Image (cartoon, rainbow, N blue to C red; front, side, top):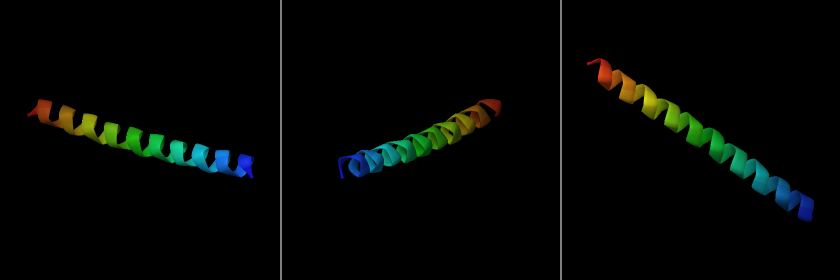
Length: 37
């Protein structure tokens, strides 16, 4: 039961990190796009 709980937390953190990195990538892309203008 504890292992299942830890697995749920780990998957949640992994998903959040993936979403966060995706948002940062888009933000950097927009920032570089604005610099070109």
